[in-house]
Length: 252
Length: 326
Image 1 (cartoon, helix red, strand yellow):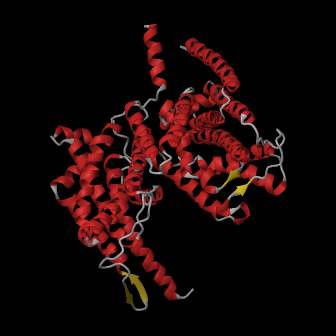
Image 2 (cartoon, chains in turn orange, green):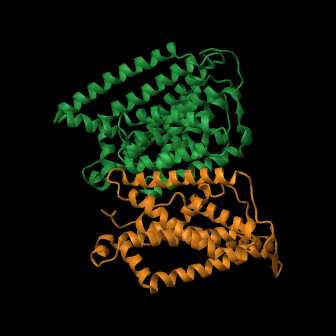
Image 3 (cartoon, chains in turn cyan, yellow):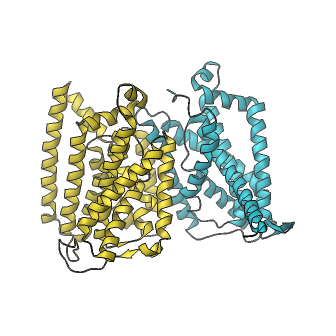
């Protein structure tokens, strides 16, 4: 193995890793916020990819242009999922952890079922786009342009998220709710609204990742199947374990 | 309190014996092979879910990777039989022991994790095992193993003409799993497990060796699950990694217990009796289109039940009973 091969694989891995990071950061946001692992996160990715595909197929919209639209749509979807499902799951008195796991799991299965029903199990792909299939070569290292743009978008999203959480009122409300949902209610912040927005934000991030992945990946109902979620969930462990999220006692 | 608990246990045992006797008589009246097939699967999942319930329900260590032990049981039996001519009965025992050993080896690092982290670890480990088996040429890789049909006999545990022997074995398996749980419920281990589930720190401070009790639960649970896997390999006589180690098995083992009532004696049985026929029927009546309607119904059911009855359907019975006493 030459040095070039090593650098090449490192570069490819890094680009893909950043995109995975974009998927995972949505998951980590929700997990850090309310200790709920969204097992349907992979399915969020799947519908984002389908949304991108259909915008391309019907309106000839390039994935880069549809990315903000898809992210906005996913934001609404995430908030609705919180309000319709997760809000009730976190209320469970008995077997709380179990209920959270199985309600989001059930949701994943339903979403996959609907995708299969409406979109059929056929593999789809965005056949031509501005970036698809292009590569750039830097000092003998070949980098696929879609992944490169994906990595840049991910970095931009991370930075934006950082400033959003640390510098805006909503971001501070999010952090405060994470630390003590009870005390937050006392100062007049609606916990449900913060959680719904948190879910929306998490879903919007995965929507962004899905739109970019649609450029170079096949789209089918199982694409988001749990291994996406699992690989993302693994990456959640690093940031989440280093913060104090897990060491605090479970909320009552 | 003690006496009422003892009374309840005695009543449970009597009810179980009656139910088993009734179940044993059912095939005399039901000759339809399709229905018999569903009954075999129901009993098998009742047993599997009961074993899952030991680790995840009683001890509170939610595992979504039990397909690993199921697959190990199936593979040990099938490999020993096809490669070395070892009878499935020894394979069943061997698979159980191997699974128990592996469960403890994996538990050693994993039981240090709590909550979601443990769940995620179990999923990932089972998926790694699935990939290993898919690429292990000696074990048939992704093509799997075709168990050769010799002749119908209890010795090789193969029956091509009738489902009844499988039915009775599955019934025995379900009864054994139930009895083990019933016995453990009132043993030292059972009390430890419930203490560990409710509050590991308090349990530790009272002298329960949390780590060891988790290891015990994992070993028993994995052993019984692997025996179920061995049975399944003999029942379908063809196994491949995806069909015995796939993630859906981990889910299918957990669901009856969740539906019926996790950490309860009757939960897995009740859940399996409702869920498995429902799964099979939705699959054959509306799943045939290949368009995933069965998935929608199934998934929606999981969401609704977990939200509406977090304590499981068993709660319906005990509440009524309590009300009657008052």
